[in-house]
Length: 546
Ligand code: F6P
Image (cartoon, rainbow, N blue to C red; front, top):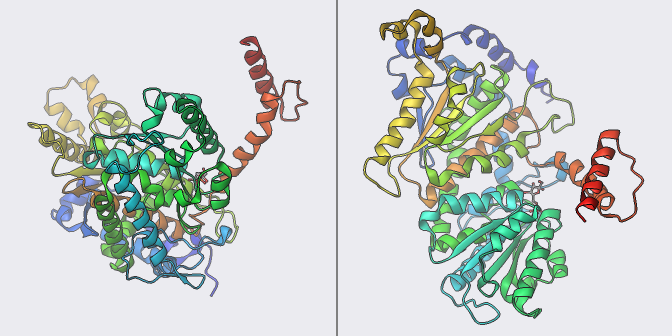
């Protein structure tokens, strides 16, 4: 049955009317009218606890948002993903990152093949390799053990590994060095390798396609660096390079023996791949057991997402709340503020996950959308952000919904630090929600002229995710939570959250411009006048420097 366009659906129209009634309602009033709101508007699932009471919603809002999810057949979409249907329509692919963390005895069929045994075969090979490297059994060309592991990749082939390494550094082998090279800017390569001995260095070339300009350029520089350091002996490559890819042909062309390749599948999107073989550096760092614990965390959240009723389903609730602010309040961003130093790269990781997935302007059917899709995700760890951009969140003119992430236990207990850290995250959500009224400011004896400057309006919404401690399983739960929140939003917006055609144009133009920069003869330029001039200027500056 053909559904009307999103904004003409009954539940959307009801939400529009409801928004008009509720938009001015203050969180102070919502809490005053329902003193147990903070105990009621919480949810637990997949190992995580969420307090969503400090959102600008009532029970009616939730009811309507859930009705929207139902009207958009979110349940059917979830089932289609888990079943292995080709829901990535523009690339005609299944979307099965959930298969990467299913138990061995599960069955998920894609194109007539149960993919679960293949997943575990790769995991077992990764575990074997990781153990050999960790135990010094996998030696470099000169017989020295590997002490340095460098992941070379970009986008999903970098952000997941680097985020996971930083997040789980506490569990990592401290005798080893882990580095990540992504940028085609030579500085990234040079700084990552300058103090390392090639004889003790292993490169993991991570690229789903094995054709990405940045990764291939860095991989070739790595090859040269290694050969130069080891006397140019080609046989050294086999001991110092492994590949993670879906493309054995290109891996072999590069000169890496496909016996040293760890595969994954086209049904794993780059930004959904940190728990596939792309996580090889993570596994070497934290060991196979911890890696499997992380997969367990992912799976727990997958099961919660698949089975929990929507009103208690964390990814669904968070997805719907993000959509509520994005499409009805006109909020353009979501800030994710983890109060744990180990999660310092988590917001950067989420940027690709959320924005590459839901930054789309047409529906799956190709129709232009007339509503806002993916918000801008950003963030920094607390408490640093408090002394930087929080001012704008507290008193600026924009509405910025927030996800706070806090942990009860520190992995590095140190005096009062954890109490101070947690006090701050709780205080921020309280201050943002309730603010400070002019009366409160005056009661402090503030001169009248200063009162408006010191007033905080409050009514600034936030979620708080409270976890016990940052374990590998907790990281898996958190990542899967956001993956499925993104899915929820994309399903309602009816977009393809799993393609990324927008990044192609820039890549293609760069290919055209490269020879125009490098050609010794003055090229005939046929771009616009700005682009032509920038190319000419670069050529002049380059020539002037010799
Ligand atoms: O930026 C586009 C993109 O295709 C991402 O989706 C992907 O994660 C990244 O490039 C890297 O791709 P690959 O793993 O194929 O090198």
